[in-house]
Image (tube, rainbow, N blue to C red; front, top):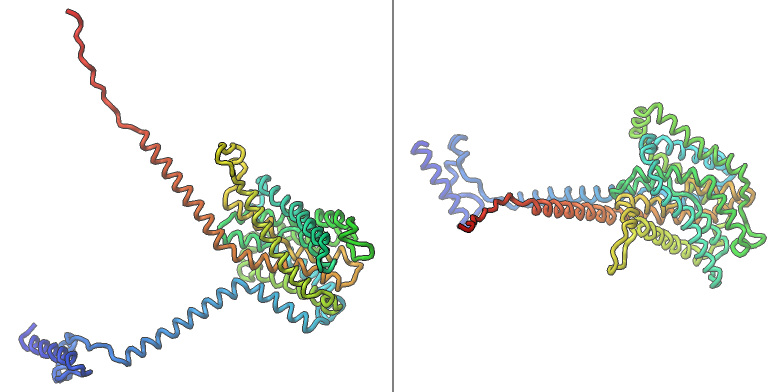
Length: 462
């Protein structure tokens, strides 16, 4: 650097220092900063940020805050849009019941009760991976556990709760009792259980297989359960609405609306797997499935409002349905986890070998919980429509209400359980890694270095 340049730089530095000491915004001398060449001006230290730059920084921070709020709102909408949709369907049905009722504007007895159900199970069949099903179908112990809990434990547990309420003369409408029995006698959900299992890090393949098995078995088992419970004159007194399980009619109707679309979807996916996967991603089959389910719920609520059947329920009935549904779901979840991960409470005795063999992994336990504790609306409402086809459509709406609210409860609580179950699974993996590291360390300690024994010289008798 030349002598002239050094002098200019020293003068500019001193002017900046004087500016900082005096508190002014401009240096005392700006001669060299305005007349010197660009190459020399680049050596001048920059002045301190002004108030205008501070305001600009604040203004730049505001969009980032709004962006975070928008992202949070959007993530909550994506997560809970189905629950918002249910609220919208209830509101539309209450405001315009004549549109979606039976024999109404859209002829819901055909367009919804047939069309929407066929769409739901056709898309479910297209979504089920045949290879995954064949791979997991051999895990009979897991499938048997889920189906026993879903079709035997929960229905009879609900039956015991209902008989308890009847014994203590609870102020609840008898048709609500029947609705609870029907709700707990249906099969597991078609898709939401596998979605929540996947989100929690569980075995979603096992959830998919059990959803398919459960909905096929539900065509036969659910009407049989309604026959068993329908013989109870206390629960179904003479003159009350009672389903007529005509198995020929049930198998025909449910076979056409549930089983045939499911099989057709599986056949199409088997022969055209790549095309189906591309269409599923492009058209969002899961969203279409959920929208069809919302339309079916809307039609059921329209029937209940149009016939004024919902007005027969009191506030006590609604509150009882909500809290009992929540309690039944939470008890079912706890029972599923307990069965899948049987504890050994006796510390004085060694844990038996069969108990360790019985226990499922934490990933399997999550799948068992979501499949065992959830109940389906897409299968339950068609079942109610078939069983109670000879009664008023309003009765069908009231009988469907406990199932609808149970479905809402399991969606809300199931999504709330996901992060806790995810941490539980991760904690189990960390424990397994620590145990593996400990066993490897013990094995390394047992490997000793070779020792060389020194032979002691002994002298015999001379």
